[in-house]
Image 1 (cartoon, rainbow, N blue to C red):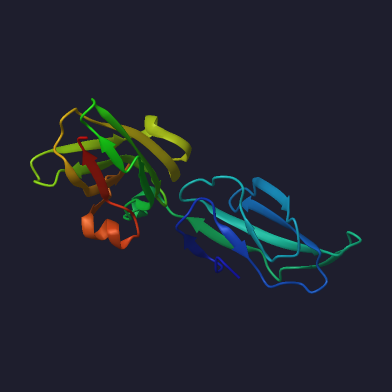
Image 2 (image 1 turned 180 degrees about the vertical axis):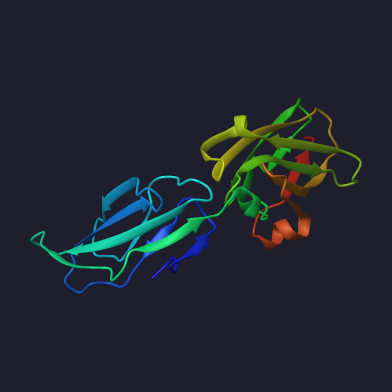
Length: 219
């Protein structure tokens, strides 16, 4: 059973799991605020899988109580969890974890700056467990290290998702006659709303499986 009874959870969208009932075809999950017993919701699972992700964002630093009931194919009640279980969501001051880079890509990966300025579109997926993403930067560095171009991201550049799990997109312009050769991503810098930061250098980005090389040509 997770989360364990009377523990704190590091998320506002927890996944609840319990021991399966062999007769169950589906379950209902009820969630209340422990103090005052305000009903947050009562939901039916789509099948007999003994887990459920709460479909609403819970409040920070609040204790909740949950219980599960099992039903068979006729809709008859066939059991319940032995007890109601409590958990408490984290408070913001408990968030000391920086954002996480889940994906990084850019297109095109080869540009010709002989004919004029060229644009490269950079896409990131960034997650953050509690406070949410505030800012990100991706810096490209030229082969001689004498030139650089940066893409900076904030809420306005998020194309989907939310501040806890979002896709961000930004266009970087490389001026005509920029230095040719293999440019590389020098770093990725991530910041959440509490200023927890993550700095990833080239080697660390490559280690995550992401391409860092941009070929700049003059034809």
